[in-house]
Image (spheres, rainbow, N blue to C red):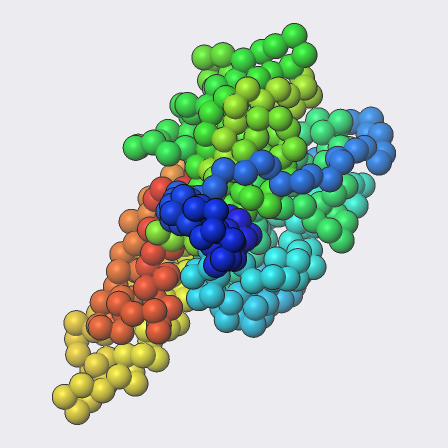
Length: 431
């Protein structure tokens, strides 16, 4: 959309437009494009081809069950978290305001993020990754650290790994051979997990997007909403109702006929460059069905996605806390820091208390998922806390800054807008 608007704006400034009488129609087009976004063909995609033949799908084994619930990161986890935290502070946080205004990440930022090798941790060694066992806790810690820098850019960074993680967990040997090699190379493709639809009280288990069987495979029709990096994505995992039998997952390459993208700026997550994915009679081969269309596969994907959003909420909530503590200690009113007022001190304490509860439940759910234990209850609790307390923490941060909380000079208003997405979003990220 940015390129389209730029080209049209330059054209609108040309004197030729006046001589040909196209001034008014062109201005109307620019206005409509800014407001609604342009629908364009999917991103020019690479040719996904198998580079090796697999006898069976490669899976990551569950982590060892020590019988203890310990939040202390291992040495490897600590090193990963420190590296990601440093990247978030030096790269994401300074770029966040500009990305929010321009609705896209700065040039080169996402490629630098790919160099961190975030997706490699979740890909088995036999497929070129570095993973040896399921790393849900590590993924949660990484998501939290990235969101401490900026939630919108964190979603943009994590979007490709959601697709690679799904392929590792539920892809068959042919799907893994076709697509996963691209995620371990130097040029990791933009990719997205598209579950969200523009519908009030949207239920991911009842998608409006439809899939029907054809002699050669499947045909998809529908619209997915708030898809991160939609215009750049080369590969999507899309949910659709399979002939009225329930939700199923499909691999859709952006070059497929019938795939178009429309910009969809939102209240928050603006750095993630969200867009609508239009699917109009998109023909897919039989091998595009992920996980055999099984309901338990889809259920696990939804739960692990919601767990990812809980981890992101924890990271952004920690950013709010880290920002307001020095602010209330340094902000002087009536001759003393405002932190000396009980109402202010209690509000800051409440943020810290709710944040600890959210992190505890999220990491407990991640640990159980990693070990192959039932974790549905813990995910439900984590999502509830993330939705309710995340927005509460964002609101409290704005309130504690007073008038400064309302202006863009301070990042808290952006964090508040981003945190409101937690209760809306399905998909996009996956632990």
